[in-house]
Image (tube, rainbow, N blue to C red; front, side):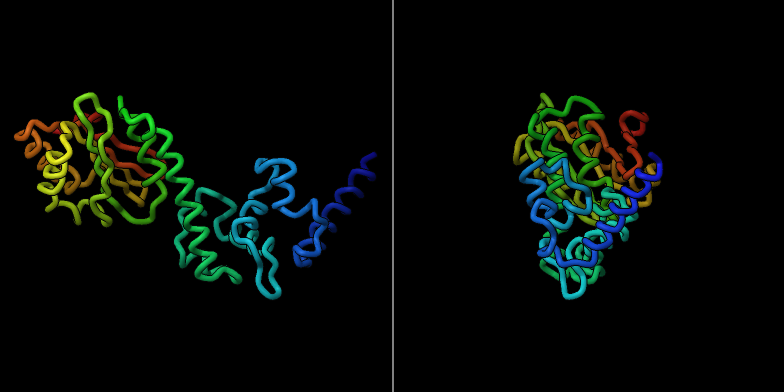
Length: 247
């Protein structure tokens, strides 16, 4: 029985190798990713097949299945790592040009927005975990720092989400007035601040603490409460409110 199983495995491996060398137009129709998805649903596809569907077509001498495999290999076979890729990183794969790279980046962004939208659709942030679950899909795997503000009413119903700056606290330190002006214009009485640390180090910097203290004091003069400043990374989060460092 063992020899039969081994023989079957050899045959399967050979079929995979043959497929890799063929244009997908020459594959059996039921093996094509789009047909598998139609027949059996998206969960039946491998990561490679899903990527091949998004990429669409291959290039001369490199079919779309091979391009998808190369892309996953570049991301260490991690979809989380792949989600960090920018357009230029996608284009490093032979067969992926401007349009395909932009389409891949758009798919990754849609995934992030879907996760964030699940919570925001509820429109109420009741605790730190709610805020983290909202922000982490957006900021957790970004390769650059960006600063975000959630504007809420007294019942902590979200009124608006603003991306204030890309580049972190250093680029937002002079924008306290802009944050508070926006809060007054839309009638927000509570704010949650959030930015990311791409390095993975979740400890707030001296600049983080200084800016937080500055905006908390300024907001209190206008009866606006800054209820938290959260730092997120791919590996976790740090809440200044939970750690008693908000004031």
